[in-house]
Amino acid sequence: MLKHFSVGAFIALGLAGGAQAQVQITCLTNAGHLTRQHEPLAKMFNDMQDEVEVIYAAPAQNYADTHLRLFRASATDTLPDCAFQAFNQLPSLARSLAARDQLVDLKTLMDQEPAGWVEANYSDAMLDLGRVDGVQYGMPFNASVIQWYVNADLLEQVGVAVEDFPTDWDGVLELAGRIDALGDDIEGLSFGVDQWGDDWPFQVLILQQGGRMLNDAGDAVAFDEAGRHVEAMMLARRMVEEGGYNPETDLNTQLTSFTEGKLGIYANSPASAKQIEERVGGAFDLRSVKFTVWNDAQGRLPTGGNAAIITTKDPVKAAAAWDYIKFLTGSQGQDITARNTGYLPTNIGSLADEFLGGYYAEKPYYATPSSQYERAGAWYGYAGTQSEKIWRDQRAVIRSVMLGEVAPEEGAAQLVTIATDLMKR
Image (cartoon, rainbow, N blue to C red; front, side, top):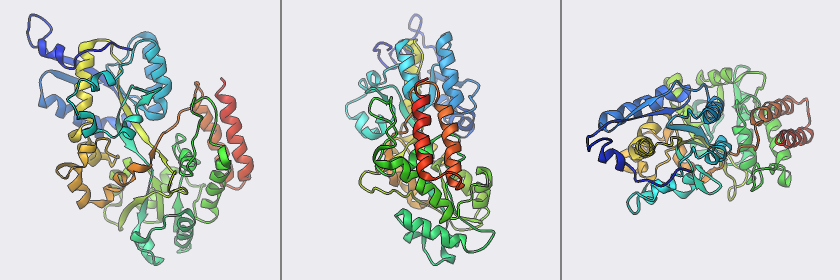
């Protein structure tokens, strides 16, 4: 890994004869995050100081494309100076880049900050999302645990106040069924695990039981422990049979149904909060509530999102990238990010009244993520190179279960076989 150096020291000293010189760093993110999040933050950072200029490379299409581009850049030694890597893909990338001395151990930088700086800004659970094999390779920038979006008007029609939203799955499914019965054009619940682009919502079904996806070494399936894979598939089928979920409609149609007031309970990331609010536009009483877990004591929810990593070998650029990352993951950066997106803030200080504390008090719709800190768990990534294919094949099985074409027990066994076989490639 890259050697220890003093943050900002090279910039402060100047690069030639004591003269001040601006350092330019290039970062990589994906297109879905660039405009709403990174561009305004980079502009603010560039405007507030004149030592570092941040620019962004042409964005990747999505997390999977980011992953692929970083691996290719590693092989050709053309990595950007910093990048934003999905939590579930960080382990495989970090192990590969660290072996080539292309990744900074951020703990060496954190240790140079003033005493108490880490504790004042980051919980250990949040920092753990950026650790691989005990090394702090990433600083969590975006974090999200799934939540329910609720049409309070439809709940009122079946005699339930949002404040009394059920906290157990039986209650949620019963409520969704009552909403579904309001009319042929009304649906009760949406949980599109069968169509999602990655296995985040499937992992929800395992972790919320108190389970885990993989063993401690990360090289063998563990989501079948205690029959949790069967329980997950049984719940998926119940969403259709009892909750009014319609797997025949695609994800975009489900979102449209919700924002047009035709769907009662909708599961999605808090990153969609702003978009959903804009699309609803006051047409109904839009609320958000904590997601449902089976196991209150041990149940967790996989934390989606990404961590900032430093991938330059140049200590001057690495110091500059660290300054930028501290801004992004600091109180001000996370205040702006949470307001723009709805993401769970990764900085403890951002919850103070002068930042998000007052904002959440005024807009409780956006406060749900901050109420789920204790439920934030790992978003697992499979070993090997077949993660995308594993999910494509598993998703097809889950869809068959939800459609009633395959029994939950049979489908659950197939999920294990798919992951076990493809992880060996």
